Length: 396
Image (cartoon, rainbow, N blue to C red):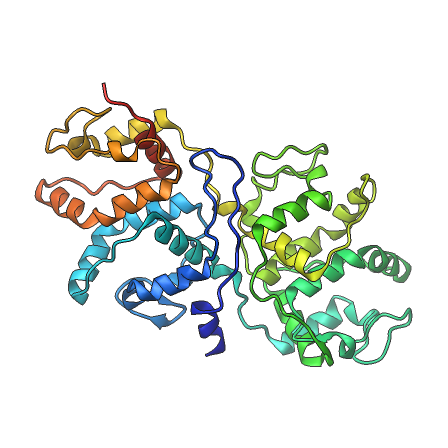
């Protein structure tokens, strides 16, 4: 029950952040935990379960990969309107209307669901602790040969954030010790670190830690990314880097994982990254738990940010998808009817337009069905292009 309550109530405190004033790169909601409340209050939970908890009419959203950009998530909702309409009719409920802010909050909440770890396995964790060589430095109790903390000295309720912080703060010493012992830097696959962390928790008897099971502030995480020198090697979301590291925006899927698996990704690259950072002007950074929580949150949300839409491509989609039949092209009347979209011109937030589409989706579905037309489906990136065209198109 604790994990279920966490999904619906203890979600996150993520401050809004904007990478540029470009239309398609909109800020995240100030409080994506509001998305959890909206998911319940707007009735989404009546049809959709989250990892088994909730309705059974629609798919369990906790078991679907929703690691798309904000607008691609909205496109997924649109693509499933026909089946959603049938489910709503069977359940005899009303489809809720949403504001742009509400739709953005729900999208952020759905994107966030993967952040929570699955339960670890203590028995597997014990095997990993020995097999990966952790026991060579960290005994179950007391101190290691060079004063390393035993597991009983680790904080109770130890979190992945604490583990990430320790990796970086003590990385050079760990590497040096492994070299002396003739050990290779162990790599963790799949859920191995989740199991290891479960084993450490079972033996930890130190002071209780602020667990940071909820992510930090991605806006602050972006500042940490810059101030700690990460930006010197790695460009991200249009930010230029002086080094030749990988653009994290292009590898952002590697960080769309549960918190501990993000930690695994960071751990596996530890020696390489630490060696490079030791040669920068800032050197190897030190992190507080909050700084690490913020940084991980920033990395986690990289995929969620849309690239700017292309109005030219959007105009083509507007025609190809059949929008032109009702709305007309460039302000001209449509063949079937005329629904004016001029109110969306110069809209700053694309989610306002997306919400308008959502709110009228049932009427659109009925009209398309009556005309014997196929339901238009968006491909990746098309929603951003279409909305950019809608906000910039001019009457002729």
